[in-house]
Image (cartoon, rainbow, N blue to C red; front, side, top):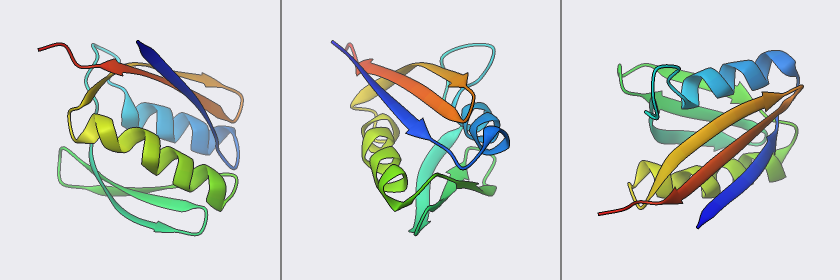
Length: 99
């Protein structure tokens, strides 16, 4: 079963940044390895290369929604299927990981 969530960013730039941090162009690999912090509408992500990047979302509700949705992918309970950018929205699709 596929699950889809639309995350509203503060603007198009932040949506493009989030989309590129989440999804590898070459395949279905996620660069994000963890969520370091959530401060109001800002989410700070840890990446595979050990760097950290912040992304500004529309509001605190969007930050919490993103953190909840992405956590199961980080924990490898789900796998990332796609991340599509539509204006300032990133539409993320995940599905249960097949063993």
